[in-house]
Image (tube, rainbow, N blue to C red; front, side, top):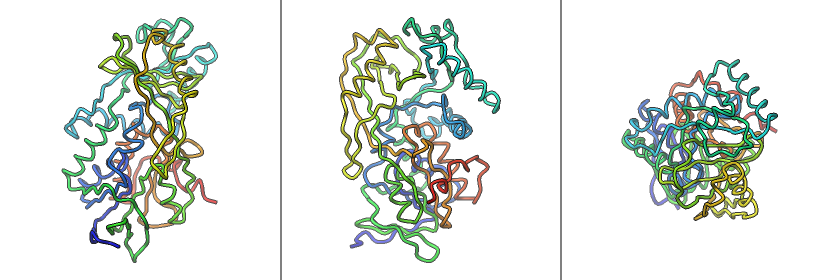
Length: 374
C-alpha cells in the first residue's frame, strides 16, 4: 500500500552511496529537481566500509581519465562540501618485492606516459625509502602516485549528501525499491510506502544494482563481494604513504592517530539479501602476514577490530557507467568492484552532465552496460 503519496522530480537516483549522492550534488546545480532513494542509510554499504583510498595509482587504463577528473575534484572537495572529509594528500605507493615486479611497474609507468599521464613515477630502492623508511630490506623499489591520498569514506559521503540537500536534492532513507515501471514518459519507482516519479532514472544501487537493471531488461552480472579490513592499536608514527603490493593483495596506511588500517582485497562472504557479511579469519591472517613481511615493525602490532561490507563486482572488474542501451531516460553507475570511492565525485559529475545535457565528453564507452548483453 502506498501510504506516503507520490513524490515527483526530474531525476530519481536509486542508491545513497558516494556515486548516487555525488550525482545528486552535481545535478541539482544544473537545474534538476533530484530525489535520492536509499534502502538503508546514506553510506551504509560500500561507501561507508571501504578503505578510503583516494587513489589514481594502478587504475585500469580505461579508468585513468575518469580517475584523473575525480582527483581534480577531490583537491577542492573539502571547500565544496564545507567538511574536511578526513582528506589528506599522501603518496600512494605500490612496492615491488622482486626485480621482475619492478620491471612490470616500469612498463606500467611507460604505458601511462604514452597515454599522456605523468602522475605515476618509478621509485628506486633509495627513493622508495625516502617515503617508506620502515619498509623491509627485501623490497627493491616501487611505483608512486605522490599527489593521491586518503579520506574518511562515511564522512565524505555524508558531507556530499548534505551539500546535495543544501542545493535542493531530497534524500529518502529506509526506502527499499519494490518495483520500477514505465508510465508514459516517466519512471515510476515504488517502495513499501511511497511512489516516486521522474522522466530520468539513475541506478546507483551498488551490489543490488544488477537486480534493478535485470528488472528493466538489461543484463548486469553483479557479484556481491565482502572485502575485509582490520585496524591495529596505535603505533608510533612510521608511515605517511598509502601502500600496496605488486604481487599480492595489500592496502596499508597509518592514520593520523597512529592506528594502521590494513586491507587490500582478501574477501569474506557477502549476504546481500540480509545486508550481512562473514569474516573469514584464515584469509584475514594472510592480510596480516603480508603487512608484517613488508613492514617488519608490524610484528609488534595488536589487532583491535576488523570489518567488512557488501560491495558489487563486475566480471571484468571495471564498473558500469553510462546510459541504458534499451531505455531512454535510464542511466547506470554501479559495479565499482571495490575501487570506486576515489572515482565517486568524478563519476557523479559525469553522470549529472550526461543526464542534464544529454551528452558528455568523458570516455565512458568502455563501461557500457551493453558489454554484458546476452
